[in-house]
Image (tube, rainbow, N blue to C red; front, side, top):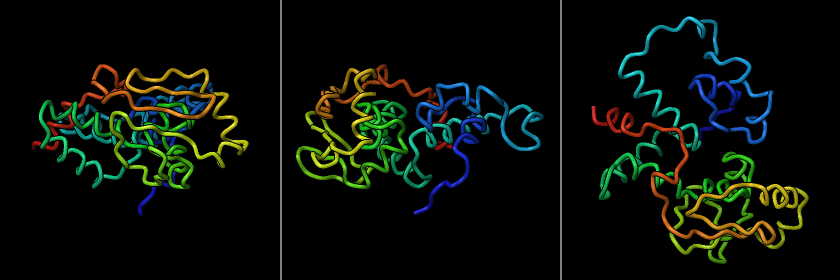
Length: 208
């Protein structure tokens, strides 16, 4: 499977906003966007006005990078969202939010979506009592997500439990940091998704 192996901070600089790809570092003075807000590369400070297509492309790339998925995956999510009832752009964001790696991150059980994806792949999480190691697994209302009992004893998950107690959890989720257990109360609404996205631009891009 293809993976991005370059500096993740370059992605934030390219999109001109914080994508929160590196956890606590994004909130510190070491954040690359805070230090150098222009795109990377020798022509980063001299870019010209972006076209309508360029704006649409950048919005799609930004959302894709926030959730850490590949182009083909993203296109598949869009096509699935298009087949559902309702607003296609909102359906797309809801599908992305339902990914298990994103839910683990939203519950505060990982510092970033990248870490959440790694922890899921290594089999540290149970969904409704069964081990799920597929980051793209889509959760449903009523699902329970918790860290395996053996994993809870590890130093990393002890750190996560301490940090999770101070994190805000979206209203569509419920988290218990003491037991490292979470529950999906309902599907998220657009108002409950804080991803900085103009999803209509993505719809316009794929509708060309």
